[in-house]
Image 1 (cartoon, rainbow, N blue to C red):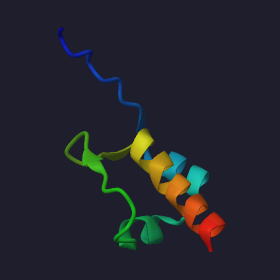
Image 2 (image 1 turned 90 degrees about the vertical axis):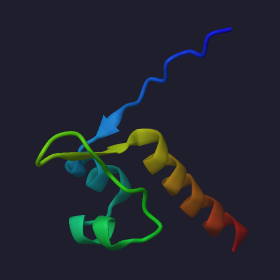
Image 3 (image 1 turned 30 degrees about the horizontal axis):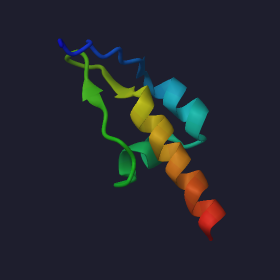
Length: 65
């Protein structure tokens, strides 16, 4: 059976800032935060599912502690 192609939704920096509440510098400076992918010579984006997984991990940490 052939594997289905994956559909990725990419988020630009303003969207990542809005959904995480983090600033640009804290997004790039946080070693636990997902790394962006290059989508052009001067453009980067984040994979939405990775950002959402990071948010869910923060929620799980809060509930565990």
